[in-house]
Image 1 (spheres, rainbow, N blue to C red):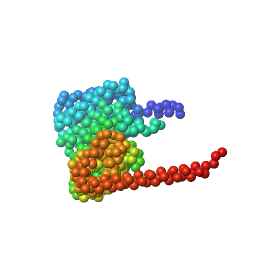
Image 2: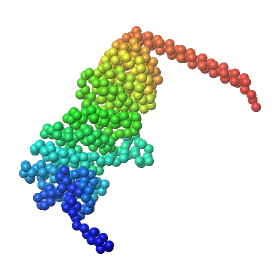
Image 3: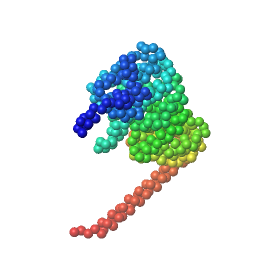
Image 4: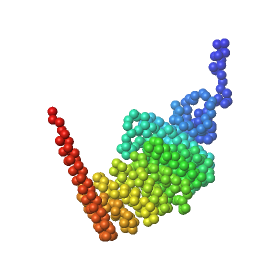
Length: 492
């Protein structure tokens, strides 16, 4: 029995169990088998392999290099015949199908440099337009891109650390250690998409819905360099692949919903809004209901999160684009801003006032009249803000000719609302610059309509006199109460 077991242990390998790169996914991308010999496409030489026979479903491995290997550099494209360049392209892709460990800068230095140089050559080859690459080359190139860029992102700095979440503006951005390779992979993908030689009908087989969805998920990366490349690539995909447009808009919407109503944490909101700004710019009239709902349900609520300052510039641009496209939306936008107006965050108020000015600049008289009362009640509160920047920014609205024209046309409604706030600034505000700006605004109203100005001034004086009388009455009552209390005091 023991002899049988010993003999069984020396069983000869069958043909299917023989050394085959496809068992481990290290063969030529897409081939499933390595090509052996000095003139072959093998670039990874192994000293040993584990002896299992499970075939890899993915021709490009998603792991780092196996143990005991050597990566050999390949010849340059210019050094081979034109007919051999497509095959060389595939062989170069094979080298780049390995993800290397960048946690240790002293590890695999030679292999990292070979991969970097190979990626540079691939980028140059696509950019130079040396020839239309075959469909197989396109397929294997996208597989290589998938292996390199689609990965588990590290946890954000505020996650799983046990520390309190910091202000996003104060956090140091995380920089991806493998960026020397990632940048070139993104550059290759970008060059491929923008190339005039790229056939959209062929490319959309590989840049499919799954690919685009995973690409959008990568906007959660904390590395701003990566998000910048993703922004350019996704924008190009939106422009070139019409079939993906509804998916892209829906996926971005879902990220925004999750950000607004659940996490209030996402690194790529600004970049996604930049893409949307360009998309909104291309909307045709009459605007679809879907787009109007996006404005009301997504863009306006995006003013609520604490981190709005990190993406407000892009958000403001998107909102203003809507109003410029369809001026009838101005009333909804202004009321939306008033709904989410900050109460105690002065820096946020300054941002809102800046956006409000841009929206008002694109607003017509009819829409302006619908929201005059709530709008100027809020502006009056801003005029009296103890924070001089808020008060100053509100007073700067009168430097805009279009807004002054709207105010002049509706002065009989507006001046009675804000006159008291302007007078309080003159009498009580601590900042001298605010006094000067307020005086200029009052002078402007006086020149617009002296009669109305006098009426408002008389009302303010009357209101002030009544307030003084009430204050005197209150003091008299307190004195009487104090006297009565003194008469009934019991001394011990």
